[in-house]
Image (cartoon, rainbow, N blue to C red; front, side, top):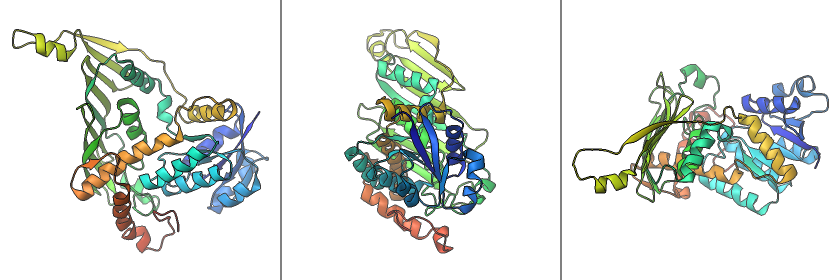
Length: 384
């Protein structure tokens, strides 16, 4: 097709952002054709904001029935992502899900099964995959330059949030409204990058703290320990209650250590592999010679626009997706495993026991303050 007509479902912060750059013509081969939101106030002055030819709808059903789009970006609260993407794919529309792909793996897996049977293009908005530093680090790992990974340490506690942030919406930081805290809201990108660059672990032991720093139901502090098939280990630490925070990914491997922090990639390369040195060095104390290397990478990265451009190119020309929708389940699985490990006070194997997680989550949704106050939220089975 010459031009992909894109619809946006959900005109909150992210949905409005997507609608903005699409309406300004910043995505070659695409134009904003329609927007949709259940809040009437968000649909006011749509033609003034986005153009006279942009249609507005108050329900996804109405949008799909109008047949005025070819593809849709779902930018709603988390629980709605899988059912709306599924509905779009089943009706013959290409689909993009905002992060996270969903709240629990059972829901996301079912969405992926529908996508696998469809000939439509399904993407997920993992915009941090477009960044040059993240792509270069992934390239280093996959090239074998680092050798076999021994340990990963990912600290992302620069997600500081004041209580007023959580108080700004009744659905925020509740089991019924959002389905989680820092893992579901702030860290989907980091969980994705962790597995995208370093691979998926075999099992996880985690310690999530609920309302440790804030008056909220869900987790705002997490420390997780992971084990991989090759014997490597990993640590993942995140929080919304610490300041100043750190954003640092460190990978220790046989040929040295690489650190991504502060917009720089530094590789401390051992002249010989550490596994070889420790077997052959005859003099007791000693360590391999190390070279400190600053690794160059292309700057920038188009973030959300970049993922949308790539998705549109895939629709029009069959270009491979940088963030295929079916990959969204991996970060959700890591988050589910961390949560389930805390709830059961035990190790959790990957793939996670999706039924057990679903049941545990449902218990907490039933007791959520949003439920008690009669708020209209989506249950974990995708219904109201």
